[in-house]
Length: 195
Image 1 (cartoon, rainbow, N blue to C red):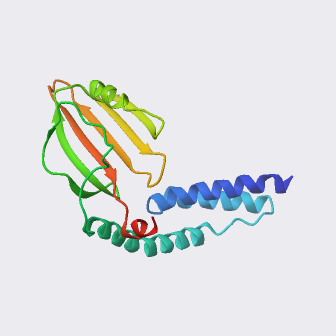
Image 2 (spheres, helix red, strand yellow):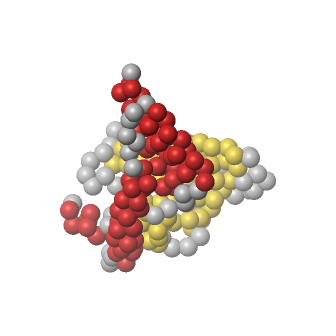
Image 3 (spheres, rainbow, N blue to C red):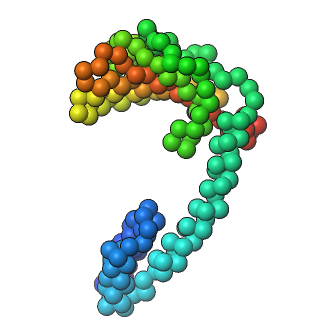
């Protein structure tokens, strides 16, 4: 009977380890870990050392973080043309807000182009969806948050080099234009050499 609870205790400890890793260890986490340890002792089971596991994860993450930032910066700094794949669908009535550029967006090196269109996000996404064919994976996400409409359409090549392009079109209530962001992941120099 006691062994029956062991997987649940380990799962419970790992969940709290993940929560504690996402935010600084606080009183609630300490209390939950203490309660789990007491419950394990009552059943005659050994609780894994969650604090030690959290410390090891933090050390590993600290080692990887500078390396990841260096890879992102190398991708941004690498020479070469800044362009979307030649198969990228056109955005109807699109007015660019500046040149195509390399940027780090949400910890991903990307090629980015921003601009506007008088068409609604739904109309833009509908036009992009017409590009669907067997050579590309297709996804479309829709959201309406406080009447701000966003449509996100992504195409990804099925054959190597698996290039991907995403169009995100957003229009806030009472606006007459749609803000458009076109983006594509930029391979890191190491990934480019592997291909």
